[in-house]
Image (cartoon, helix red, strand yellow):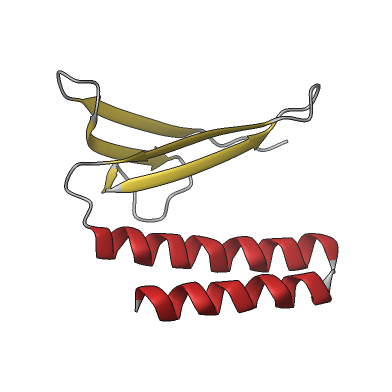
Length: 106
């Protein structure tokens, strides 16, 4: 069985707010650490069936960048849901919201 490690490094300021977020993965074709402004991680706990999540963004993240990040995340979640469940009807409803969100945030 092949394994791959993903490493996240978050540098915090004196108020424990993210200053810098970096990630690296053994299989990343770009290699090395890459800096990002924001991240969302959701994990589905095996035993309790709870969703655990980490949402972080740096102080330099602009509102328009967060709008873009959210729009792209909503799109990706909709695509993932459709592929995982084959529930086309609900995925289409989700996509309507994604389009609405995109229009409202330009």
